[in-house]
Image (cartoon, rainbow, N blue to C red):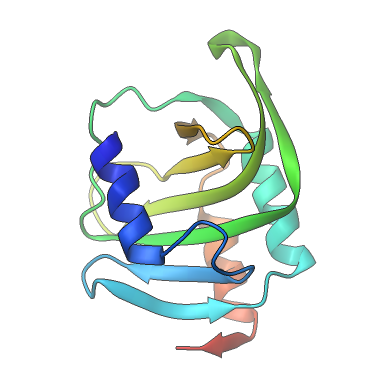
Length: 140
């Protein structure tokens, strides 16, 4: 897990570097789109957090051939999953969307206490992908 988190820091820079939403393409090894962190992104992030079903069970889930959406949460969002003992305030989330294969999207979240969690969520990424198609990009 430490390798995954270190990789994300290298890809996106410091956690608090930007309040913007960023889309990273692992094939291109760079941020390919930047968006304003709008209420639409905040609402979608909250709905994905509300659908968290538990922790990722894989020891080292792949970040290859994926799009990774970074959403800073303003304000931080509460996340409680009683079945796994998770009770935290989330300040930032990374939604990992594999480009192909059977692996469902999953997320990495950073808590207010500085912890990182790898999580499964039931909502899926279809709605956030549609959101990316219709919101205005700041740059590409």
